[in-house]
Image (tube, rainbow, N blue to C red):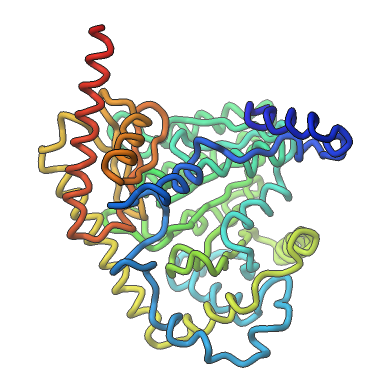
Length: 439
């Protein structure tokens, strides 16, 4: 059990042992990560007066980035599309439109059998449903070492699954498909594993290229042929934000119907793709060859939704639906994509200039909202704290050396100053560490 959970349990028992006795196994194991991204972001919100590069949203002109097709129409809807409960599976027209979107963006899906997407309360809910349906105590959940911390809560703490990790990058700076392959094959004795694939990756901002994607698919197929039952979840939270040479389709397209021992799930949503983080509209889609199986899985999914949330937000679904139907939707998304791409390209140009190389290297990135610095000698947490306390700049420390920077929420013209100040802070920490060793 995590030490933070133990601390909470002791407090509850001390204050009222009867209430402590009411807690379920899950209730005893859940906790809020004090040193995680949410906590660091909350701290940065209070103190980061200059730049706050911690949170995974995009900002523009001092406010959250948004599409006019959402903002201009918030008071233009019929009451029937706002106030009644939405169906547990979501608005039928929205589900159909999102399925059409998947087919348009991933043409190879036309050759596959997959379900009508079920609307979820954004992506975390979709992942939680997947965990509830497929993760049992002791099951292996395969993740790279560079991953979103919420997976541990969703699959590990909530469901008691065992997190098994492999190194994200190989020695050539590409995706470590061989590491994934070996980790899958290591599950042969258990006979089952859940594989989580998150591209563009949080925190690194990396998406595999076509060759690497083929290697990933081959690794999963090999595991399936070895008799391992594989639930493969593609977390496509940042789908579409591909700035350089990378796979442009979701791996869900390749993995659906690949082998009887593979069940593919796609978790995605309007949340990040359409810059409507607070709307909480996501989707869960299954890929399997049998329509009857897909329908049965959908019914089980609806049972989970009914028991937990009943249904999603009707107004949010209406807003997304009407925006997607607007003739301006694709044009405005492309405009915002170009803003994000310019920011990513500016960051890469700055990092490749050589002016910061004494302080860090950076992990490859080609997509998404984030990138990660690998500090050479400075401690990442010390740099994060110094940036916050002395510079008013928020970043996310991950482990001893990694510092995640969300370029998505920094204006292009401010990026050079941001990285210059991060460099300055890193050098200060290096000097402090050197002085401490000499004492």
